[in-house]
Image 1 (tube, rainbow, N blue to C red):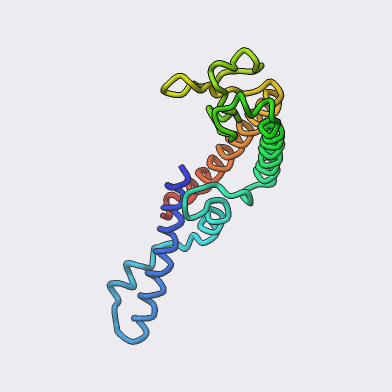
Image 2 (image 1 turned 60 degrees about the vertical axis):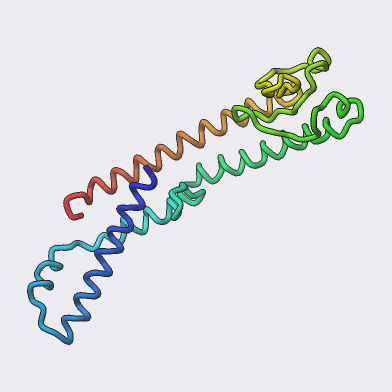
Length: 181
């Protein structure tokens, strides 16, 4: 997991700081026991650098982790913008506004939907994804955005696969260094 890899990066940074500190103290005081204990500690800076290049402090995989991930995430942002624009143009229409519980766009199950009053269900094409607790509102994915939402879902699956590939790669690098750590 990203958080586990960040722990590895922090361990490597901690080792480096410890060795630097012991070396600076050793210049003024004789501390052969500590020097001997620090001697076998390996500097795995390249692994730390690679982990930090791919994962941020919050444990999120960064766009910069791979060209594929950056491309997919850019396509997701574009697709989300298109879906929102399509729904925005729909909810600004006076005839549609009277059928809405509120003029807002929301997300249900990774799909962009709009809140439609129950009595107008038959006037709306599309897929019902959820219902309010009172039953007065249906969250409907209009037919006009089904294809856009489908494309977004495909992109998010590609994003997840790429994140998993990156994490496998970083895990393999960590495994190669495990003995030293």
